[in-house]
Image 1 (spheres, helix red, strand yellow):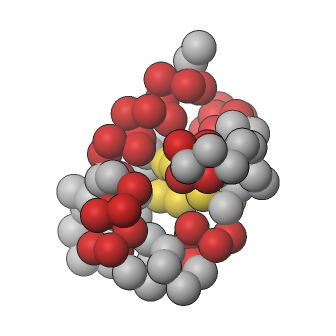
Image 2 (image 1 turned 90 degrees about the horizontal axis):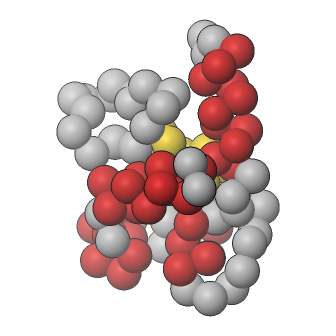
Length: 92
């Protein structure tokens, strides 16, 4: 269960809009929260501080992080690179 501070942080991250769409020049599109998987074991999910804002298409669409992780990372960068960018933008 997310704490009040974690929920506020995740809301702030989602408010950025999809990080992939932004990087691709599509502007800010509505985003869902994606808990990064890189560095996590098996079915474990990252803490609520390690999240990315992804639109539904980039989160769970045909060429998304959940359907084609390797292809997604080849096209858009690693989860850790996107996480670093997200954290930087949240704290601007």
